[in-house]
Picture 1 (cartoon, protein in one colour):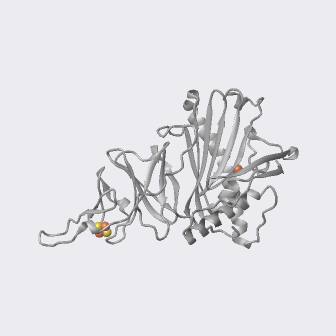
Picture 2 (cartoon, rainbow, N blue to C red; picture 1 turned 60 degrees about the vertical axis):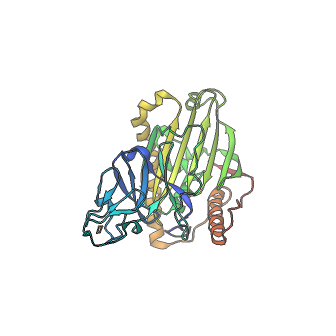
Picture 3 (cartoon, helix red, strand yellow; picture 1 turned 30 degrees about the vertical axis):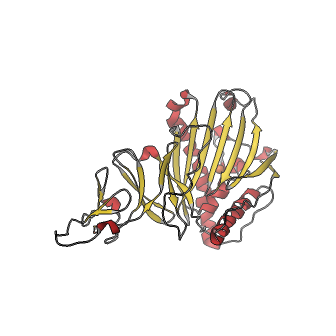
Length: 352
Ligand code: FES
Ligand SMILES: [Fe+2]
């Protein structure tokens, strides 16, 4: 946490991109967790993820041609299936026997759900088996419902600093100062919220939202919210009224140990909200960019002086929980035992 880099967690599912960003017969090359990853969608509509390196001479397979079923490398035309297995070596003569099926570029488990493409990054010694538990399901919406709004900004910071920003309850009045979201820093109010451990993290216990707020009124009566945080960097907010529901996801996906993609998405049950997508996405981008500018400036300081950083009670308690949950994940993996959540229910108090 002190410096510019973070330890990246393995044995978990990560949000790679929105499913709509990869069309049938298309491929997208990305760096995720420091690894070159090629994400594609076959003509049959199924998504897949391969290690984006040709095992012959190392050129990224993403420079090759994808016919909707197999990828031909751009250098010597070796062909790979969507399972990463080599199916053809064009240079071979009839009497030259090479068992192509033993040549593999490496495949990742890849699942499309709720309009997202998730990729599983196995533990160091874990053979890809397809047996990994499923990626987490978001509440309320069915498997085939995609987010109504979705943006991503690259943050030049580690996943730890991105996560701290995500779970920081006290920066809004100083950072998020657009006219439509202005909180006056001179009018900070005392806050008190109950938290409890939840799967791979913790959650802010469901509580009522102010009924006089015009935005919440759109969801009907008795509007409540629950916010959960879980490894490997997912913040899920579920806001429900008696008429409508909104689910927000912020997902931090490491590019490498000091660069992070921050995804912000919303699923909504109100049909009228969908045509307003460009406006909402603009506002989401303005808002998220305020967080991005903070980490750009923070990096300036960390690069110059590598100061010793502080976490104070109670405002930074969730940042401390993030590090504890992460440490436990790594220790459990090391020892080959199940993850045991180290957190206890707690009420946090701050001013914001
Ligand atoms: S480098 Fe890919 S086929 Fe030779
Ligand atoms: Fe923020």
